[in-house]
Image (cartoon, rainbow, N blue to C red; front, side, top):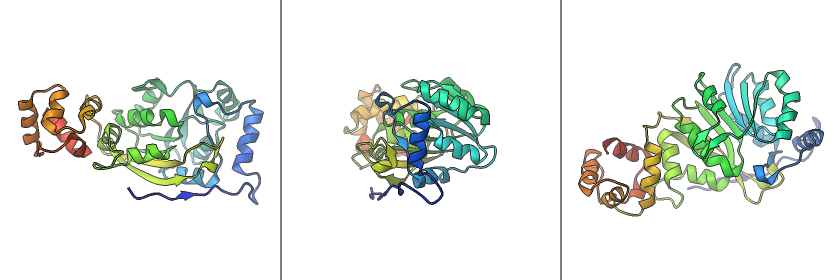
Length: 290
């Protein structure tokens, strides 16, 4: 994959007033909050990254957007200023209280809780919001929940019409990888079967407070089609045998060699290929015939 160059953080001060970092720090102080490691909090403090994240979404008055981890509301405010109706999920009690007084009166819908009800299920409020009409996902995602949140959002029957999120750079590489790449695996296959991801740009470490130990990236995604029932579970199962040729991999995942060979023939896939060489469309085709 072609390396995506990092863009340096914006200067600490601008002629227009306090820098974004100064505003975030002031809001944290006013909320009597500080970054919590257990929640993976690294607050965005680079104005250009914030602008790029918003520009990656087709925002317009009336757009419906889910934001996970709004923090002090820096991104939230941008979304609302663009006319979006925002549902924000905040796990930090102190920050939720801050948003309750600062942005809920402006029309923010706020839920205090975990965006993930379980490792494979989003918060019921997100699912209910998604079922209510076209929606988008925008977030500066905590690194440790980025992949499950993105995969579960893409797998919903009511898929988001667009996703723009900051993630760990390695995570972005994985989700946008292709067969043959070292990073190619079940997560990328599921994400790409549901839609088209793009690694928009790399982000330097100084764009966040506190400064993380790794670079980040903005990943975008647009939907292709809803995933077939059971596809995500099946992909994770067969990728446990990713280096085996197809009949062996599929047999170890639960079907006979004869069934595996018949499925490969029906999908016009050479059974001598290894499981890890299949693209997302090929995996969809094979799954449909099993």
